[in-house]
Image (cartoon, rainbow, N blue to C red; front, side, top):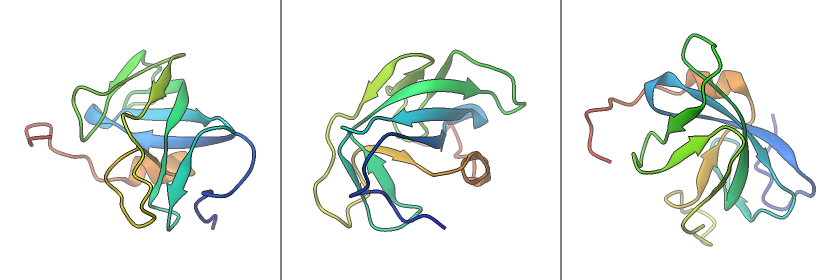
Length: 116
């Protein structure tokens, strides 16, 4: 199992789950700020949206964050976090990700009626 790549070098692929069960494939650039204290608590300052899949595995163009309905992921675009909290154990700010598509798919779907 990989540890969070807070101090790792180079670019890598990451995954995240968005609203409506959409799965987003991200390219984390080597220059992005990174933080995290476990494999399931990793965040970055920015990423490039490589692919988006709906809950059936079909290609999609856009996805919306599970926690901030104003934050959108668009295929081919760069996303930049408003802020990345420098505190090691804080998991509030930054772009959250996991290391595999299977891990992203396993994340419980959040009720869209919940307040962000």
